[in-house]
Image (cartoon, rainbow, N blue to C red; front, side):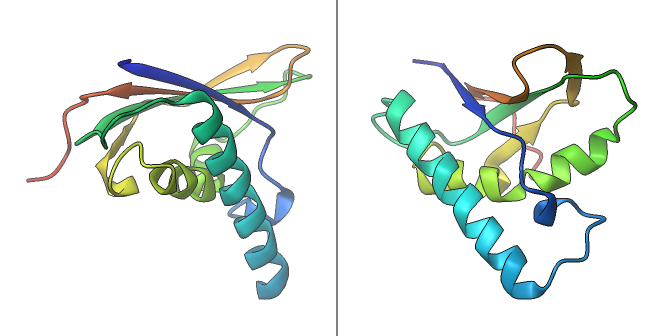
Length: 124
């Protein structure tokens, strides 16, 4: 298997970079989203050993056509990337290469992560 697709809900508001929640509320939200991503990744992936590197394609779907900041979407998914590393897809979330965030309008709102094995790592 060279690709894994994971569907997640949008991250909670406390994980958005421009929000200013209490540190305990943010920690709780981070832990919950990280664990949800871990459980989802384990249920769909059957990776024998950790991939040395991977590429992540992010598709964010919303009900409306409002403008959204792609950088903030990527930043709010930090806990999800940690959950993917916890699931054993890669050894460390630093081994992911992130493709530009794609934003769509549709009925099935949420985040779709498509993780592909063997992307070139940006390490020098």
